[in-house]
Image (cartoon, rainbow over all chains, first blue to last red; front, side):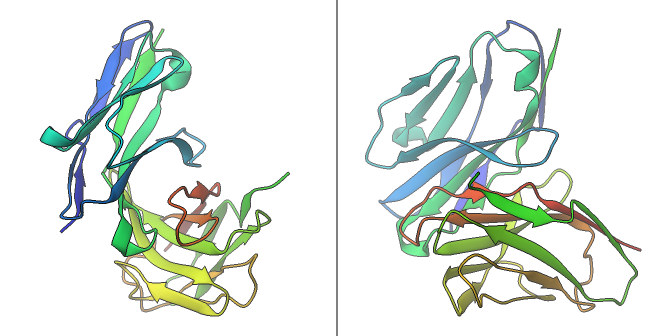
Length: 115
Length: 113
């Protein structure tokens, strides 16, 4: 069965600190997709990244970076030099190739960045 | 501006009443989805539709119904059979069933008393 675990419920940091959000997934498929979404206080989910199971290259986009490791079934998300605007709930999600496009979400990590 | 609209943002109903949540998209996407979010929980899939006039149950479909008569619209009805209807409801769409990137609307917060 597929499952996504985000063990960190809440994280609080001070501006300019680096922070890593953990995501561990379970799937029996060899082809799958992993996602990160951001949910600011307004409620709308904002897509951040998609990674397929055949691409283990790490990705960097500005202050955001993602580390995908199939050996540990993890897809961790790091924010460098955090800012107050990064405060949000972050969700990791999994989609298996054989399951249409249904997304399985983790429970989310609430990140609070104070100034 | 292309996007997904959900209305209203906040909805209040009395227990025992059916209520319909609106979801409209002008992205020309084939697939649409409804998720439910409870405090401290991730999103759970209620229903999804990959094409007009077709839809499938998700993980928590009991007490909900949907229709997909037009490509742009995927309304969700929360029936009186839904035991705990108070939640935040999010609608999403994707280009088609093979596109794994979903775009989300702003959500509707339903409170039933």
